[in-house]
Amino acid sequence: MNVTQQYLLDTYRARQHGEPAPPAPGAHDRQTVRAWREERRFRAVLAGRPVSGPPWRSLGRRLWPSR
Image (cartoon, rainbow, N blue to C red; front, side, top):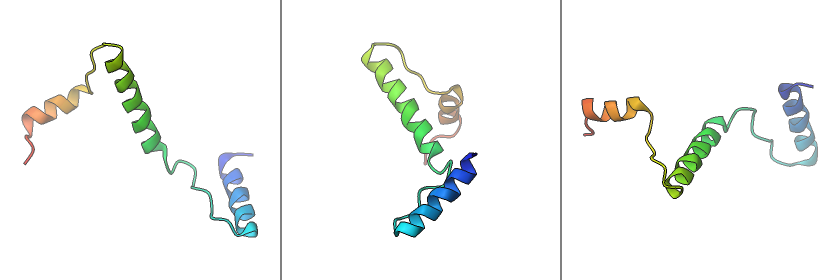
C-alpha cells in the first residue's frame, strides 16, 4: 500500500467515525524541515560550534537591504 492509498483509507475511516480528516501527505514537510534545521543550529550554538546560514542569505542581505 502506498502513501496515497493509506491516506484515502484513513480519510474514509475518519469520515465513518465522524472524526476530522488527517492532513494530506506532505502537507507539513516544509515546517518539519525548518524545525529540524533550527534545532540543529540551536544545538550547535549550545555546543559552542560556529553557526552560519546558507551563503546566499548573507549575500542577499548585503545586496538588497531590508526596507
